[in-house]
Image (cartoon, rainbow, N blue to C red; front, top):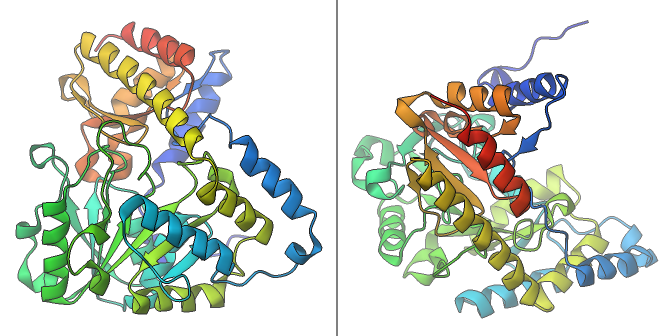
Length: 387
């Protein structure tokens, strides 16, 4: 028996990646070896000392009970110390830090705490789809902020109409940026914070890729004046420590914003398995040399891919951070057609830019999440396709 879906589900944009998965299976059935450069899931393993901490913690009966939704105090303290060491900003682990079942969960839930039906949420495009999805689930209206190359993939804040700003409850930003790999500087964050003060809205900064940088380390939004009054920042252990499947992250920021997100969480989830939180403490507090090692591996991959694509005539936005490469499609081919042709003829999976929003059209994204040999093979296959 089929049941009609809710209106909120009907409002969701088409799930482009389901079509990609279908095509992958179709191509694989023809005997073509698939090389997936589509998903941002690290191939590098979770560091050994983190895994060992999990093993010990999983055997401890105290961790077999329901966890607190806000997270172990020890985990929140480790997160606040990590933030202090990394960005020079202090947060009280009691009421300015909350654990997240991955930053995705926090991004999806935070509109439920503050956005009423009809309120505007400022959403970057191209961008992580959950910004728009969370807004839809809360009954809000996504106002799209185009990210254009001529503005280094930063939103033009002056282009947002005042009547929209007056109805805005929240702005999502994300730097280092997925999918474009762009970075933001202190001046941009200050403009965002000043605008939020003027129109009294929340800034939700997604910083999942804070440690995947290559030249200059990115700054936090809390490195600018006034941010503590209006902002929350989402952090994830997924990319930094290759812990995507572990589902653990945290948010820091304004006490009132943290409290609102916490109230949603206490009603809809039961927190993170405490053994995973202990492993998270090990990640944040332990030896950080593995982070530098992994970063150097991604940098080597970045350089290889960028140089090869440029030699083939592709227009590449040079990645300063993240493990993505954002590339213009050749000859103004639409991104679905381009990525579909590459997949069907070579078995290489790329992500069409339009999957991140209409302003991602004309681009495709490569994830640097396979080893150098597979990257080289994928690039060799792409080179053989003519457009």
